[in-house]
Image (cartoon, rainbow, N blue to C red; front, top):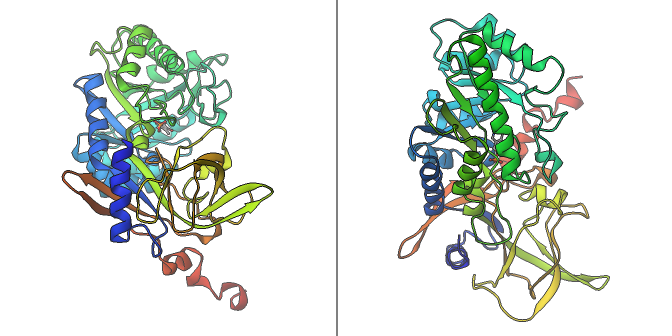
Length: 433
Ligand SMILES: *Cc1c(COP(=O)(O)O)cnc(C)c1O
């Protein structure tokens, strides 16, 4: 999303009160941008690939419905994500359920609906053995961990030696056990790997997918039949948080895959992908009012309404998740003027609630608006309930001759906060024990 697009939306949001005293923080999603990202994903891989969107990256029903209409499937990893994917209107046959902690009940629900399951481990496969009928429509796969190593953010790297996900392929005896698991189950037809997310270089991801491809070839050769018919290669394309440039692109990713496994895209295996961040991150931003400014220890601090409740990762791991911050005035016009190092802080009551430290920005004042860029995935859609702060409102926008906003989610009300804080059981501890 270009800076001028952001500026137009901020100005409009301030004009109509979507940002201002009554609503001091909101998320915004560029609908034309999302559709164009989905198109570039489809174009890069070519036809015949099921691109599922990782619901956790933007768990908002209207966004999921837009993606479903644009031809994506959905990757879910909890009963809540499955529920919102169904509410969004995804055909169950295009939903993939991945979770390391699937209960028997969740497995039974997927099998009944025909939702695909990627079993995380061999014990889960044994649970499925006991539940699955032969007329079940669910594609069933097994997640493997190719153990190719770690990216720059440990918490985002799922293919380390000791990752909690999948069957660790390089462990003694694991490969043989996986081959046996397929030999014993003719209905087990998919291999799944998700090597990691932000911070993992494309070559590392491609190496993990290459290892998964070689395993599929080995299993099919050992069994003397093409039992594995599809590969789910996960998501994890990193996003550039430093500028408007979309890099790496889906095209770069496909090139990296082609050089690691030239045969991957030749059509012998149906492919499934599970991208999240790369579809949405650069198509969203947060706008927040500056409530006060102050000085402390020689540092200028702007207290805004965007903190850890909407930018949790950035606040808790500032080195790993830096964001671009931009300054607008009370009318929503981009500010210029001399730069001043300022802390851009949030409303939460802990000292670390700062989204940018000593950031050079035009001097912020009360009533200004700050924008946190590239926050369309895993930010406002994944709020943290710290301090009983409300989930922020979220809007989708289009700009043809003028900006149009559509409500995606209303800000959480005080009644909703009270309800989710146990209002129904208010007397529980003073009367019923
Ligand atoms: C989180 C996750 C994804 C999406 O990762 P992104 O980095 O958002 O593309 C895909 N698959 C699995 C299994 C995941 O856990």
